[in-house]
Image 1 (cartoon, rainbow, N blue to C red):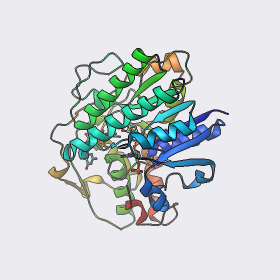
Image 2: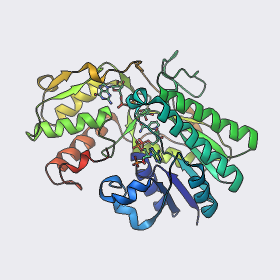
Image 3: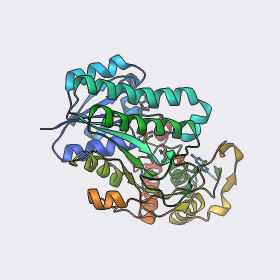
Image 4: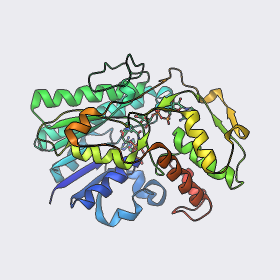
Length: 336
Ligand code: NAP
Ligand code: F7E
């Protein structure tokens, strides 16, 4: 039985990936923060349904020793390093901790694997935010990096660090350069989930307005379940390579808003307040990925389209706030 470890197992991607690995017969271990063990109902809400089938270990990305000890005990076959401060907006407010957590955390995991389990296959959660101010569209593995946020810089450095471990030490270490992917498990501060929650709550009479920033920003949005399948595929290949994962279609925030409110039976124009608080000091205006390498090399392609994604998110939030979802109304705010 293969043994896999996931950092960031409590997050959106970690939860879907844990399900996928369990389905494929893996022994699954997850790294969580100490606080998650203290508040399981909120902090582990995405993995409550599989808690009896995974083994959790508490560690901090800030502590080399804590990660080293877990890897020393486990000696895993595969390591999916997903944990990160993942909110781009917040990275402008606290650039030091974002870069520290995201870059040093990655370095600690790689270094411990090199010492203790050099045969372990390593996946780094890279991001389309490395492209930032894009010179060409769509973006692929050869597109130059020009990140526009401390978050994007931390991910660019993580991709380069991972490449260096691959080239210098011969490790099977790869980065997925993943474009935005969403789901009903998306954190509430990201724009898609903020919109699906607002659409649901307004349609149920619980709220009246939604406040958003730049509606013209364009993103290539896919479904998280499709994207974790790509992570797994990357570690099953003969040769370690980095891959762009994307749908190849780009839509604006306004498109998402329109589709979500329409699904909830609303006209977004009657509820929208544009609020400059949500503008970023440096915006990434448009991203669109070219996943041809993944299609040809991994046999990967997305299965969920834009409208299906929007509908799943809105329907799920309507169920949640009608009291028919897994969480009681109010609990969605905790730790999102
Ligand atoms: P997410 O929902 O924000 O999950 C982040 C995970 O990292 C959570 O489990 C969180 O734990 C953990 N974490 C954060 N800071 C930590 C720390 N200091 N110590 C230990 N754990 C820490 O993110 P996601 O959407 O699943 O994304 C997974 C990864 O892919 C991230 O690295 C993200 O940057 C990257 N990525 C995401 C996308 C996307 O569109 N979703 C696209 C490209 C790349 P808590 O639950 O305790 O906070
Ligand atoms: O913003 C605009 C905002 O926060 C998308 C992370 O998973 O994907 C994600 O990063 C766009 C931006 O995601 C609001 O200005 C307008 O242009 O949902 P987001 P993101 O920044 O693209 C990448 C690939 C990652 O790697 C990250 O980890 O929406 N926008 N109004 C808004 N965004 C937010 N959050 N809130 C607003 O009110």
